[in-house]
Length: 69
Picture 1 (cartoon, rainbow, N blue to C red):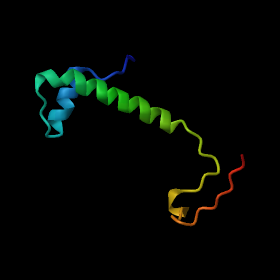
Picture 2: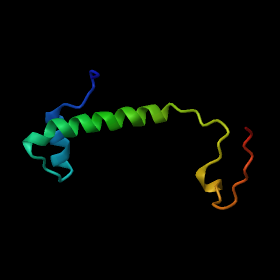
Picture 3: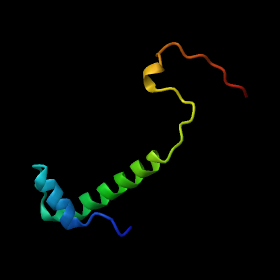
């Protein structure tokens, strides 16, 4: 775990502030899940999409197969 990992107590506090009170036995699981989601999102933010067009440029059904084997 990193130094800035969410603690079970913090997870419970944030859930309560969001209107989602947690049972005490769920605090650790929610904190671990939130930390995992945060680590995945952090990795996604580091991706370089280069010349990839935005999703609005995609038109379903207009794909062209240009794959080479």
